[in-house]
Amino acid sequence: MHLTAEQERMLEGEEGEAVRKGMELIVALGDIYGAERLIPVISVQVSGVSYKTIGDAGLEFIEDYARTMKKDAKKVRVKTTMNPAGMDLEKWTKMGVDRKFAEKQLRIFNAYTSMGIEPSLTCTPYYFVSEPKFGEHIAWAESSAVSYANSVIGARTNREGGPSALASAITGLTAEYGLHLEENRKADIIIDVGFEPDSYMYAALGNHLGALLSKMGKKVPYFKGINPGDDEMKALGAAMAATGSIALYHVENTTPEWKNAVNDKLERITISEEEIREHIKGMDRDCEPELIAIGCPHASEKELRRVAELVKGKKKKEGKELWISVSRAVAERNPDAVRIIEDFGGLVLRDTCMVVSPIEKRFHSTAVNSGKAAYYLPKESFCGQCVRFRPLEELINMAVEGET
Ligand code: F3S
Figure 1: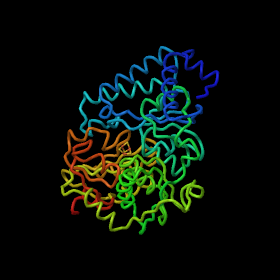
Figure 2: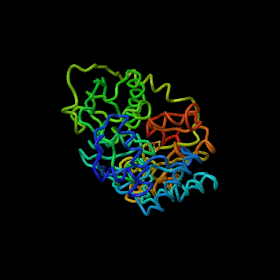
Figure 3: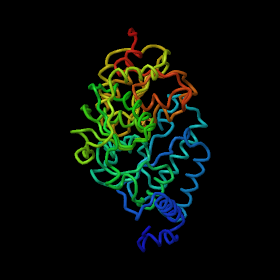
Figure 4: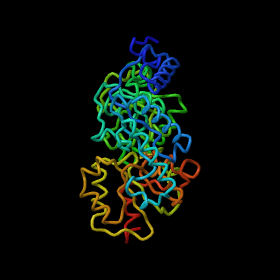
């Protein structure tokens, strides 16, 4: 790989140990994937923030990195945001998080902020916090944000791991391979959707297709016959990224790169409404939810306001919890919606979500409308839950006094 003179110096440690380590990792990845050079990135998003997901080993790694950066008197070089943590930094006692977990979570947060990383704690940094533009190169780690940035915005990022995103933050660079290159952004399969899904069906479609495409060895689907809005694309992409590592998709007449993404020689499959309804039967288990959790990925302003509209003036059922996860930016811009939901008895959580917080310590059953959450929450997965997968309006009814 060709390195500039400045990059060679960074690799040799002239800018300190943290930069050297970062360069070493990026160059190694570039070598593995056949990159010819390193390119600058406009922004970085780091994952590996929740103590639940990274544990003590991750905490030590991050604190060690933070100490090295302090010794070198270095901070991150580009705008860098953080994925959600295992708790709302202010409302963690209301979530039922224990003090030991909270202390370790705060150590992770402090280590990251000491490096100059913004305390955004969201998987939707593209809402008001870090908004890349079409064609810009970025290095993001959260899979749903990677999908949204590539597909809906047309920015360019591979799905970074925690350490490689951190390395890009420290060096301002990434290796030019994968989705940074035009030729890898073309579709490799056409999906004809034989019906117009609603929001809920988009989440199920993504959950089903991610796994199916992964089995078929496909990476970049091109959708025909659908007309999704931004929230639907967020739900579709997050679910496909979770069940099948799909980091980029195109939608005819909708996403920014659709025109040059397809040719008529591609393999084609059709997905019917019946197939998705059948798939939902496997996602929606038979249990009474203790927790109703909305906002995976973190809710948009429109989604937050819709929840407020649905609960306005109503009373929450005894024994049910309602959580809406949002970014701080979205909560701060919508104080009325937050107040309505909290007057109802729900919790509007910033900084965290139902998957990366330790909900298994408190709940056994959770209802969601997210295809990604429905993948990570079940007993056999990451959070030990019996999962209901239902549309938003039904979820709210489950939490409202007097509704069934
Ligand atoms: Fe975001 Fe948590 Fe879902 S990090 S994408 S809300 S699993």
